[in-house]
Amino acid sequence: MAAHFGRRLRKGAATTAVAAAAVAALSASQAPGATGEDTHGRRATAGAATSVPGTDGNATGNSPYYTDLPPLNSPAPSPSSSADSTTPGSGGRSEGGIPATVLDAYQKAAAELRSSKAGCNMPWQLLAAIGNVESGQARGGQVDADGTTLHRILGPQLDGNGFALIPDTDDGAYDGNSTYDQAVGPMQFIPSTWAWAGRDGNGDGKKDPNNVYDAALAAGHYLCRNDWDLSREADLHSAILSYNNSQDYLNLVLNWMEYYRKGTHSVPDGSGGVPEHRSDDDSGRTTSPGPSQPPRTKPAPKPDKPRPDKPRPDKPADGNDKGGDKGGNDGNGGKETPDPKPPRPPVPPTPPPTHTDLVDHLEDAGTKKLTAMAGDAFTERIGTRAETKAGKSIAKIRVRFTITGDTDATFTGGETVATVATDAKGVAFAPALQAGEKTGDFKVTAAVVGRSVKGVDYTATVTARAADTLARISDTPLTCTPGGEFADQVQLKATYKGDIADKVEATATLVKSETDATENDKGPYFKDAEGKALHTLTGLQTDAKGLLTLPKLYADDTTGTFLLRITTTGGATLTVELEVAAATEAPETPAPSPTASS
Image 1 (tube, one colour):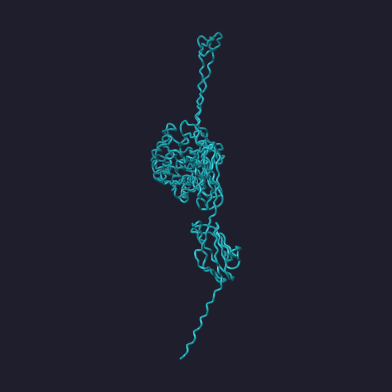
Image 2 (cartoon, one colour):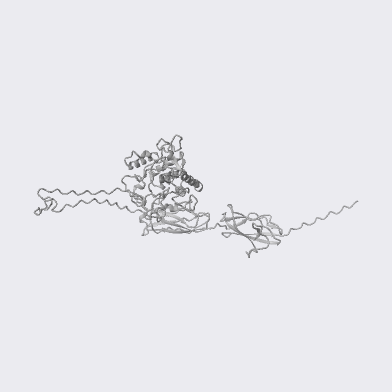
């Protein structure tokens, strides 16, 4: 195994707690742009013994992470440095090297985000920094050719004993634990977050938190939500803290991101370095082991053994003094001295109820009918109110809105999940819905984050793009001779409520009369790809400017006036006259009469 990260903190520390404290202090001092201390006056990591039900506010549930710092020098490989160099002056060759498949996953995820969320400005070095802090780059690149970890990477079970309290949400599907959740995979997503944030990054049709391509893309989209622009320091800090809510974590990720920005290189899969120190390596703290971890608890103190009473001079050594002092001269009223009992462990105080504990149900807050045309934004927003059992509104409740169903509709910003806190009136308004191109109904579910109470389901409908007006671009008469072709093509413009109606479906039919829409098989016609006559065209669509240009029209030998009817989704209809007539012969010019001779 390549040299481990952070050895400069390893040997001299008297305890692991000293090493962890040194990491925290050095991280705070080196972090670029990091300001202030943790708002709780301590490390807000998994080791803070947080007991927050359903920690949905971050990706990892504030699970432990690696605290090793980057080397002080640039990670760029140097000809004079050996591959195993790990001292601060070595240039950091092994620490700066990222396993090839893992590095490829970060860079592909960042490239996808440059296309899908250009305003986020996602640097791949941020994904690399988080991947290193969360899993040591998938434990030094222990992945197969498809990017799936060779062994599952699991955080400790989040049972509230030294960690956040997150009861099982996936029935053990991802973490193998059907009692409590655990962070999973190279980017350490908890199952409840992966359920909505998961992505398919390698195109195999699955969203697997154990696959570095899927996990890296999911982490990128997670960090790019809320319209964050990661080129702005405030947004960058907010995004990182949303991943794991700790000032130490923020400082550490910023350090590694800056380190990778100075240069890095790929190393073979499985040969990367693995960190040594974790944020939960606090001396004396009891942690909750995962299914595959041995308990790491301090043994309970043994009770002191009772000392035997020494025989008194006036009393037999065996204590069988039948004429003994009945008045209790033994100092204990004649009773035997009981063995001392071990002290009972202190009972932790019951935490006071939170706002979330008071929620009994969610109620709709007057949301009107949710309908939008394909490609348009919904004008109505979803409002949900959090209430107690008595119907009293509750502020500061986090409500999660989730879009489900066969739809490509999203919230503003392109996400299908949004978490919003209720306002002073207890109402949370979901971000505006944006319709995609798929028509039909879909569902939006409102649920309380961290508490299983009655939620609210909303049905939203996307209708087909429509036009209410059709008009010809030109007023030139459309004429043709029998057996010929029309010189001009029919061109139309579609509008809806005065605006351009783009991508609207249309049908063109040669009809028998104004009152008879039956297809007319005589007279003008279109041609299919094989040159056969067609009297009806379907699947037509207006372009981005609302324009529709029909194919060329031809005429058979039948003369007369014919009707072409064009209809669109939404009810717009236009009937155009087509005239087929024989060409008129020009009158002969009489020959000039001969001039009389004189």
